[in-house]
Amino acid sequence: MKIAVFSDTHDNIWKIDKALVRADEAEVIIHCGDLCSPFVVKHFGEAAAGRPIHVVWGNNDGDIQMISQVAESYPEFRFYGILAEFRAGGIRIAVNHYPEIARALAGTGDYDLVCYGHDHARFSGLIGKCRLLNPGELMGMMGPSTFALVDSATLDVEFIEVD
Image 1 (cartoon, rainbow, N blue to C red):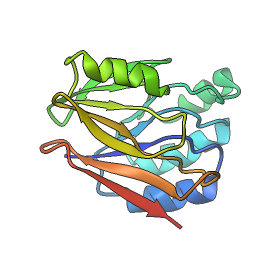
Image 2 (cartoon, rainbow, N blue to C red):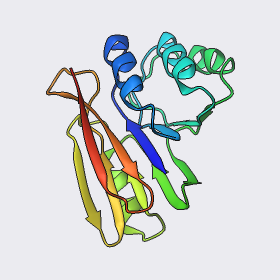
Image 3 (cartoon, one colour):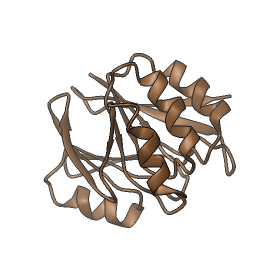
Image 4 (tube, rainbow, N blue to C red):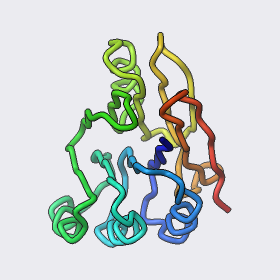
């Protein structure tokens, strides 16, 4: 199973729309925080086409109440607060916005994949048998706009750059 991992979209709907087209092979979508505004939910919700979207809050998510209300129109959305823990594609996954928390989660041995964002720096590495992943920023402020595709069978990661 392919899993698309996004973070730090920061309202860049133009990059979001391009990225979601490129992520059409993914069966699951993860967002590691900083969606930012309620209107971003509509872009993810319409592109999801029934695929689950697992979302944690970041430090720049503005109107959490309104984001949650808009998401009620899209049953695919699953908001977890600051930490998501779930299974997809036969693997154990944790998602958080912050790198230091993600590293600690990966070090527990309880997960196969731990995803995070916040520092806008794409990263993929192993801590024990756990894949630790930051898909990079989709907003494109500090570097290229990227997201990641993860193969749940192998935990291989492909970074996709969105122009």
